[in-house]
Length: 388
Image 1: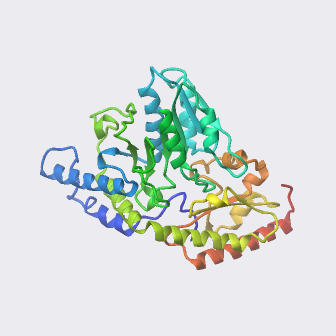
Image 2: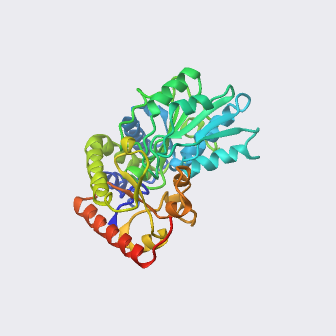
Image 3: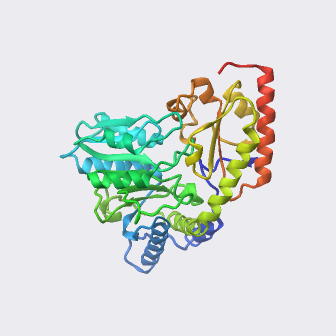
C-alpha cells in the first residue's frame, strides 16, 4: 500500500517515539505530573519541556500553551469557551461553510439550546476556488460579534487563508480570532508573535506526533479569555482539568521540535510531490483541481474526476491510501460539503480524491499513483460512462 493520506494522520516520528518510551516502560514514568513528590516533579518537568517545544514551533510563550486531547477538543474549548466567557456581552460568531466538521458542529451547538443564551452564527460562503477573503469577513462583522473562527489551511482542498491580514484587521476592531491550525502547524511558518490570533488549535498526530493529544494557544497579552469546558482539579490554569498523559505530551513536544527544525525542507519536499502528481494527471480529460492552486498548502491536492463513480474509483485504487475528504466524515456516504460549497455537483463531489504527502512519500510512490489513477479512471469510464 502506498500511503497518501497524511492530512488524515501522519506516522509517528522516530523522535516522538524515542521521547515517549521512557514514559511508557513498566515501572517508570507513571507518576502524575500534578503530584508534589520527586517522581511527580520529574513528570512535570517533562511536560513543561514539551510545552516549551510546542510553543517554539508557533512562536508562543510556554504559558500560552494549554494541553488538550486534540484539535477537536481545542476547537470546542476555543469556540464554546470564548462565547461562554463573554455570555453577558456580545453573542455573534462568524465562521465559514468549509470549516472542519468539529468547528461547524460547535457553532451549531451554540445556535441551539446548548448555549447559555441565544447565539447567532454567520457562515461565510467561499468562492468557487474555496477562498474566504478579508472583505467578506469585515462585511459580516456586527456590533455583537465576539469571535471569528477560521482555519488556516483547509483540510480537504488545502487552501491557505490569509490569516495574518485577517488577524490584524480583527485586532483593530477588537474582535477575537480563533484559528484551527491543525493542517498549518509544521507545514507553514506560523508565528503568533507576528500574527495576532487570540486562540489557535493544534493536533499532534497531524505533525508526526501521537494521537490523543493536542494543544490550544491562548494569548496572554492582550489576554484571550475562555470558560473551561472540562471541570475538575483546575489544571492548565483552570482552562482544562484532567490528569495529563505524560507520554503523549512529550511525544507531541518532540514532534513539534522536529517540525520546527525541518519545516522548510518538509514543505519543499511535499510541494514537489504535489506538483509532480498534478502534472502527471492534469492532461487527462475531465480532471479538475479543487481549491486555489496559487494559495495552496504544500501537502494537499484534491482532484475531481468526471465520468466515474466515486465509490468504484476508491475501491479500484485499493493499493493507494487516499481519501474522499475529511477522515472524520468518512463514515457517511454523503459527498464532501466542502466541495459542494465550491459548487461541485453531488456526483462530481463524490468522484473526488484527496492526496496528501509527507516525509516518507517518495517520487516512486507518486509515479505509481499517477499510473494507477490514470489506468483506473480510464477503465471505469470505458465500463460505465456516467454523467457528471
